[in-house]
Image (cartoon, rainbow, N blue to C red; front, side, top):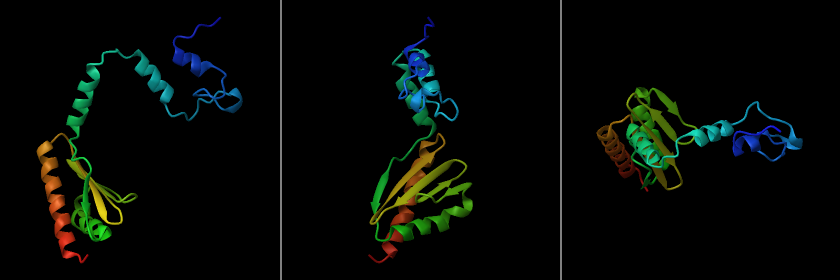
Length: 152
């Protein structure tokens, strides 16, 4: 009898068609998996100290300070988005407009998503809280300036 190293391995090696890592009819499916089983195995072997997890989370948050999601009511969200694109796109290292507008710069980035009557803004920096706060205030001022010049 082949003893499994852990309960996770037992599920992974089972022929249960609904077990993670298996396809319908119990066929093994190892190509193209999401890496969940590898993560579970790593997590299972990690030290079970609960005090290190919050510390790691705080360290991670400190690496990329964030403004959080800031909502602002605006008269014309698309016009505000285009205004910010005009002002900042030429300086950006990367731009993604698949869901609103995301611009990445060397030390900071922002994402703005429009809806019918408001925008959602999020600003992050690379370990610099003061820069994140400065850019957040700057963007909110630009949004307010554009919004006040637009006719409701």
